[in-house]
Image (cartoon, rainbow, N blue to C red; front, side, top):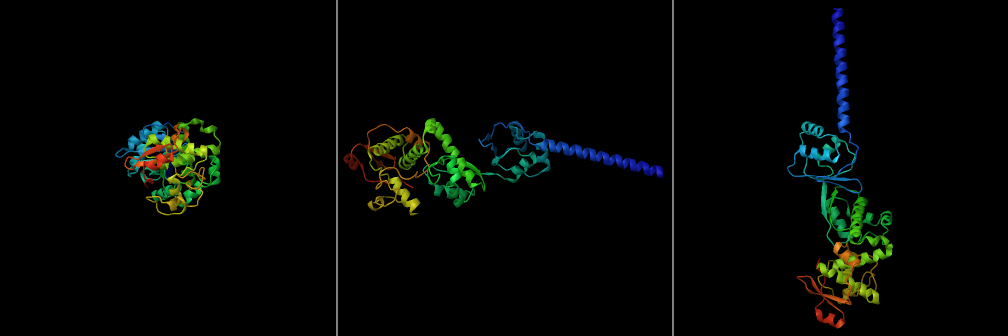
Length: 353
């Protein structure tokens, strides 16, 4: 009897030991495969890496979990795709289609949980050229990226402005208009910095010598670009318009830009966008009104795109001092050297909303 009890006890000990051994072994294997590889991450199919180290991963419609695992393994985000397939089998939820923003290193279990739950799914937000900060803020709020007030506060943050050497009171004009992918409830400061980085990246492509300019001289060109952005409609006219504004500044002549009056009416006074400007509008007393105030306005009036920025940095040489819209449908302007020619050209138009 006692001998049988000892045999049973010995068997139980061996069984418990085996269970503990294989449990520890399984746990070790689990931890090993779950731990991020730790090497460098490689861009690849449907996967790109940002300068801040963040990874944008696109999960395509109809793509299998195995295909996603293969791409993650090739990029160096996970150790092995077979463990990914194991996770996909024990979790019956499907991976959700969309674009995700990931911040490596991230464990494989956490990464799988992100893709099946839809966390960090990115919102596509298109920022049109010529938009102002206030309108931009509303777009981000409507998309659920960040609150409008929080975005405007970040765009005026002293630390962020100092980082980019912005002389004005806000980042108006220095946030590049483009299509962005942001997570929901993204920090407004990082939203602003992402757009500012895009702005200076594009500026580097347009004219890398911008780095030699003082903040004041760069601001001068960005202000010109922001005005050109709100004035031109046909790409080849942008550089001519920039040349007109520089010619006027050179001789101390008022810019008389309709776009700056629109800015006063809509952004400062908060009134609806006008279809036509009247004399009473061009006589509004405000530093941004370039009809009554010579020189540049205090700051940019919109977010200029690549064409307007290129025009401000590479204006067309001419002796034109005037331009006027003469074909609203085609967006064509008439450029002239004298006031008489300008008056004869056409009636005064204001750019559409």
